[in-house]
Amino acid sequence: MVALALVTSLLWGLADFGGGLLSRRTPALTVMVVSQSLATVTMGSIVVATGAWSEAGPRLWCAVAAGLIGPGAVLCYYRALARGPMGVVSPLVATAVAVPITVALVLGERPQPLQYAGIGIAVVGVLLAGGPQLRGAALQRRTVALALVAAAGFGAVLVLIVQSATTVRGLLLALFVQRLCSVAVGGGALFAAARRGAPVLPEGGRRALAGTLPALAFVGVADLAGNATYALAASIGPVTIAAVLASLDPLICALAARGVLRERLRLIQAAGAGLAMTGTLLLASG
Image (cartoon, rainbow, N blue to C red):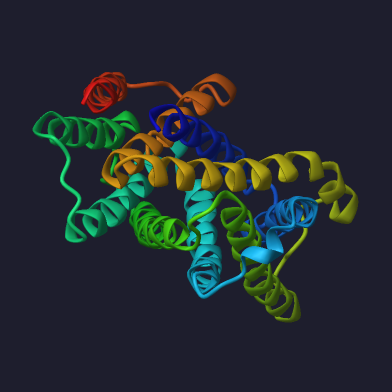
């Protein structure tokens, strides 16, 4: 369970970094729709190959709900990443972990005392790892608002996707349905934006967009795979622990920003990374 949850954080962190970076050159809505469309095609092929259609049932409504909520959360997140430093936005969005943890506790899940400590330390570490910078102009306050809306949406999706299936093939079908609904909602919003005259293509037009298709495919598939590994981790072990370990993705995003964009890591970020790792060890040892 621990390994799956940590793989989830790696996949989501790389997807977050790629999506945010692409959104600086291409409208965020276009990034979301194209990347999710490519992921949907990939997932559809897997569903057909495995015969997962036979797993259809009432639980798929949870996948539909996740698919309807997800596009708004992704769009808010990409816009926040495009507006502000990734190291600031990602930790704010990491507060999404509070939603599945709260739901799991309400449903009766009770971690061990050492794991409670690990949860608290890891969450604080993730928040500090981005070097929070909440003071500033109105633009920064709007970025914070976008990030928190995204966090609420992502938290709801985490809860819904776990409830959408009880078998591996059922999970494959649920992920496909989720992505299909996301593309339908996002595609409608993209069409409406185009009708209003809003820019939907990067500078350079369709040729420029075509040149970014491999990167867009990576973002979509990495996000999809992260959902799959998270659902598997949550089904194996306590949701409270799986959710916290999977929420370490801001660390990956911040490190990627440091390596690629040369965003300088501050002392508070290094301290946050240390706390996050300490919390991870406590969770794993429990």
